[in-house]
Amino acid sequence: MNDISLEQAQAVVEASLAKSREIGTAMNIAVVDAGGNLKAFGRQDGAWIGSIDISQKKARTARFFDMNTGDIGALSQPGGPLHNIEVSNGGLITFPGGIPLKIDGAVVGAVGVSGSTVENDHTVAQAGADALQ
Image (tube, rainbow, N blue to C red; front, side, top):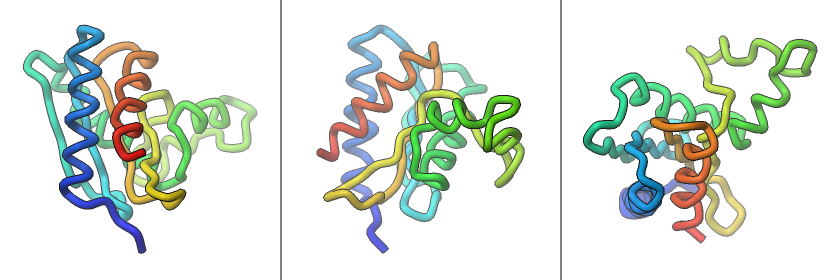
């Protein structure tokens, strides 16, 4: 199984932190490995304490299903094919801010970001994901 290295995970966190500073937000950034285990984490000064858990759950959700969490959210609405999926796996997050991390097309982990609007969370997560490309 392909897995993200510690150096790569820290690069994702650093790229995400740089983007959050650029847009003026305080974020929690979690990177999980291919097994969904926490590999690297960053919490900016002033970032919401409640968003620590959310960032980690966004990362795990993105890895468990190899999809952006916002895409899962669209499928999990009432009447959708994944309705109530967020109560599985010990609790998932199904709104934007979680993105699978890929190297040469293989999923090696995921990044989850929380601390602002879901749009900002996704933007910061995408900056982290882009650091691996």
